[in-house]
Image 1 (spheres, rainbow, N blue to C red):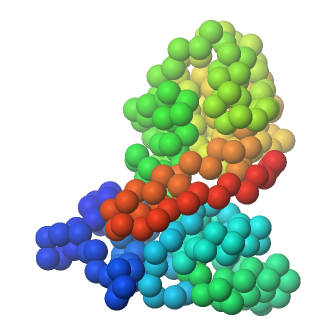
Image 2 (image 1 turned 30 degrees about the vertical axis):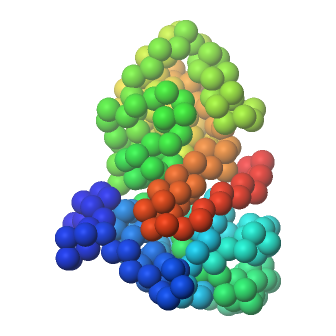
Length: 270
């Protein structure tokens, strides 16, 4: 099993092999992402790594949350050679037909010879650059325990007068309104969080000792669990909670390999 962020080539140094004219090779970039994020550690919902093969020489890396048509169009306009995202194009259960929205997105990438790199759970879980770590850092939370499937959920100490104070803090951090289900049980001393659509982790967060749980989305059962079990639930938006990991990883790797990096945030209210 690869260690987190080991990042060393077999010769004892980082692989910074380049194509002519000072460009970083696509293969070298893929190897560095794989070394850093260790996708082999995860059972995921789709393929991690290179999803669409573009030109071999890469100078400008663009990051974003989702490989939407709007993001791809913005990356084309920015002169990107490669795109790094959290939500790629292919998911488990997809029937394989290239039609409609998928055809449109693929056509743009292929027409402009842009590579698409996508990492889902590995990007959530990286201990310093991942979505959970980056959201926690912005909220001033430090994980001291982990819970849930594949230990993706984080929990750590906190000090908020009540759930409303925590919700206001989350709103200021993600710069959007949040949905709070508050059972009114007093001070918040332990906060659990997991970005994206992790509402199904709520019961595991409660079992881990949380007074409040922060994630992107809420489904119907969680409101009842919050009220009945006395643990606050905060949904701050799937996109809003996952805006931080992709640019953190892409900027880190770009700096290592001497690439230009740009983060393009395509707003999404969900």
